[in-house]
Image (cartoon, rainbow, N blue to C red; front, side, top):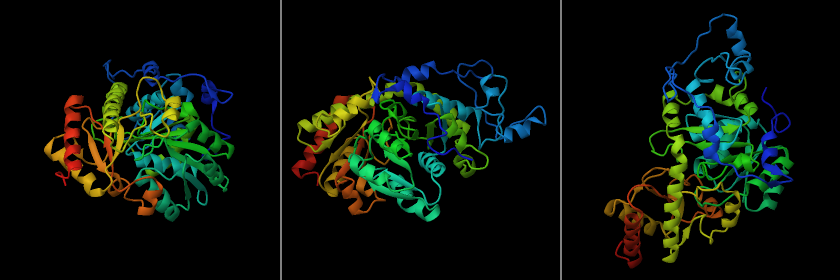
Length: 441
């Protein structure tokens, strides 16, 4: 049976980070990953091997019942003592996927992590593990459209779990919503999609815990930048498809949290990951282990370029939003939560006022200048642009988009790494001039 939050789950990590409610240390995700155990290849290779098997053998018949009872496996004492922890089946634990999960856990500063076939698969599994039929979730009203549809439409219909959407910057409203029993989860994005609203993770964690609920944070927009569990969150989810992958070539997700929670997700009888089966292919996991070590370098460059664009757009008088600008309403809040040295992220928004102007700007940038691509997603080494209201947030009604701060002409721009900064800025400036003069319309 899955442990019920929070009594049975280990909160010990938080005491290292908090003293009297005040953060006393800064977490370094690069150092944490460097200090985690390195897996050598089967024949001593510097890279870990790919375990492509779907099923695993035992040398003695009486070992198999022990695996099914959970007495053997990646989290068992036998595995920790390096005497041969046993694997069962690829939908449960796979050694290569498990290795990637441990790297993600080190990056986030959690006890454990495990990777999934998609980000939405990770989100759905976590929330289904935490909530039973008739229970409630409180969520930010400004989240990825697919997650919004999952919470608003799919869960009530299919599982009987309902969600109240709130402005997570209004802590009184969050507190009031959490008081409606039985609320089990407060769900937020560390930096919101697409408005780039920043969550006050320590304050929201305190609210969730006062009501016996778990704080679940989607950290897709801010890997390396923010470490939500170090700030008080309980579970972190990622769409690994984005910045962690960096190449827009694989669909993947991840969950990071306590060992007890990760193991509950893989329980043979009640585990959402085990029974729903959003399994990551070990070949994909192995490929991603080779990208994670340079994620920090990529995030620094994404952030530096995004800040440069945001500053110059602001100088032109454009309606730009970027958390690294002092004009951003949560700029100081973000600064207080950031890990040092990774900047403020690789995304900015540019409000062109109307859909027609937004579309024309993107068309000029893509078709005339090769500045980037009109495509959804983010974290790619090329710049990606989309009009959020008619794409990644289209699951929200017009009224819901307005309430979430998503205007019709809002362009979400994921700043890439190709070309020189000055080359790309000249292209942006020329396209803006064409649209502003009317010649681009």
